Length: 65
Image 1 (cartoon, rainbow, N blue to C red):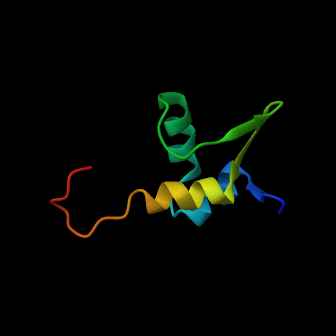
Image 2 (tube, rainbow, N blue to C red):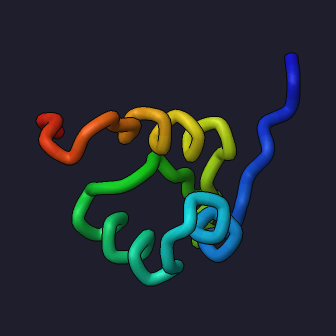
């Protein structure tokens, strides 16, 4: 079993080229990548961020979302 790597909101935002504020808004709205809460601390698993980014892969701007 391999250990999962977790990132803070700032680091997660940098990895997927978004602002920290965007991730915070999306959490409230129930959008964006899956996150985890450990007490009051919010973290993102790198594997979840990659999966989320891959799910947004498109070949054309006219593709349905």
